[in-house]
Image (tube, rainbow, N blue to C red; front, side):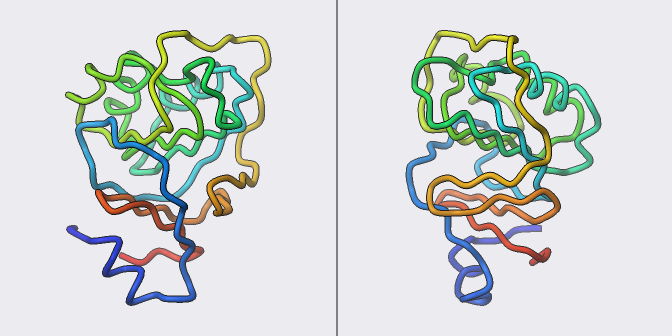
Length: 159
């Protein structure tokens, strides 16, 4: 289903959160939406790897890496796994890598930047926890809508 975040924002004013600008589109799919699954990463990509290798069922993975510009928690292999397993997109409060390859994949990927350094696998963080960044709260089971204009979060499905 085609949607525009601007139209959704107007139609549901006061009932959606508008994520502050700053996340860049890296994936080949610039428009995506789905139920939110969250990860607090802390520089560690192991939970991201675990989840993108599982069935996504049309969901969106939201990863908080504390806006770190030092290491990436998503690269081409993990993005490809997410695409293959039915994830609609991955939103990273931090960095990705392999951005040129990810740009050719049919998955939505938004992040602050790209950096070549890979994260670790020493502190797996936490799954399905409430995250707050860029002026929005991301709760597991709520819904995310992303397009060229930005990102919205809603407690209820809008489509």
